[in-house]
Length: 470
Image (cartoon, rainbow, N blue to C red; front, side):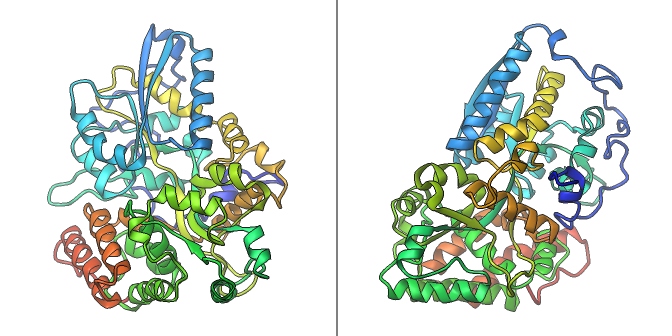
């Protein structure tokens, strides 16, 4: 990447995902049997020649920065192609997850949607024939060189074969992600300073600061889990500290499961934080957005959340906001955390305008789009020139630096809910019970494994599910 945060060198080691299968079309080199190539053949389709088009787009970019950059890019796309009208439906992640399958299978499905990666959503949609393979478009628009293979693979689903289940992380391409993201440690510089605490450089320093903050009368970590999913990120970050490679392999179905010591240790850390008062006692009754509002109001020294909250937090806290990946075991070591990329933007199989939809995906993931995202406090999957102009000590500069550290260290672990079709529901419910004190850590680990093991056994046929050590 020269001094620039260039594409291939930045993310070449981002995620250790298996290489795509050799199915025709999976590398953008050609179509599989029965597929039709984009209308322009090997040329780039021109939306201006598509006639009057209404492009229906469903997304979950409802927050300040991501909403602003999508609104700007949508307006620019319509200015570039006056014949195209974008009809946008924007929903929260929870609402989108709940309503998307019904919308895709209904009488008037959208053309472009954001689909969560993994088995519960993307793989299920592919199984139902609701998404269009994008491999040919990836070749036409050079997404295969814009994005490294390792990142594209998280938006792949394998081809159906007799007697085998589809797998994610390999196969045909069903989406392209606009944003990068990681679950980081956000901190209020003013609160830390008032408590005589410096931003931690190691994991041990971080845990030491929690006791100091509590002793000084501050809430160490603001946290709300009424929405259920925030605890998946907090717990995932703790599990990642027990070993990134093992956690990654388990999520991707090739590891040793959730029954062992790593899961139990992470769950024990979470309950210990609750017992010591490092987290709010009423966390299960506090909403994610409400918890963030409390943090922004100075109630809490840290909050553990994803970079999708960057713009909203910065708008309120300004330069008092700090962000870093979870600090490594030793100063200057390699950090690890949950993250990778934002939800995939996909083209639906019943879109009347797939070429215009693909052109739209290309536009919102371009170098120009990356700069628009950066200026709105959003982390692009592939940062551009605007990222290089940031003050490295500013919140946005720290976010970009954290992304660089994680990608160069191969420190990103996919989200836990990718693991099985039902793992989101299982894990979110089990974490609420863990936080409420209804389930001890070891039983929590067994609950996760009871969902994971049968699915992996089915995936592997008569092979072992693995159950000993994550």
